[in-house]
Length: 303
Image (tube, rainbow, N blue to C red; front, side, top):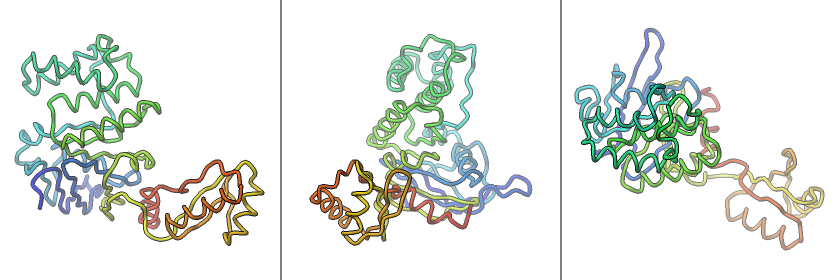
């Protein structure tokens, strides 16, 4: 068993009669981004609170870089950066002051803190707002400040609950690059999000949870079995006739057609055949990402 990163073994947590986390297990390794996905009420946030040493599990074991959040919370908090979904700020403080207070709480020397805060503000693109009161920040800007706060003490493990919530498209792209960069530095990154298409681009692995249980762990790659591809063309009627001539039975999907192929090689061959037949194809892509397909498959009867 790995001693670094995040290890969760058969964890359970209840709130009175409500069993929020029933039997969750997962491993998130250094140098990788691990996605935690599941429907609302599946126990994701409760699990993350336990990882952050803010809730005590009633059963099971958790290790953060080999340390127990229950019996060794100080060691865990020094290694873990926690970004909750709802990021609260001290509205009377300036953006820079928020980070200065967090740095002081971690007993980071002033000179080191100043340099690190300047770097973080540039990283999350808040350097031009450093002297503004936190209360004037938009939802997306507060999310970026929350990420900077989680990184102030240079943690080796990051636990992020819906970090892309409220971000505009450009900020989401920047967040993706930041998270991949942090993983490339050897950090462990566990991120929860409902935006599966973005997790597909960010994550190396995924853990799918439902009703308080972890029900599947997988590397993110193309799913086995039949694939559905969505195709659009300048003339949909021409495309439809060509697909029939090639032995396919397309179905309508808004202003596109969908076909089922056995694998990616067959999809490549189909696209080549359409182009060779002078069909004006304007888009040709999987109808679902592999992560979305896996999620829908394993949660079909569990929502």
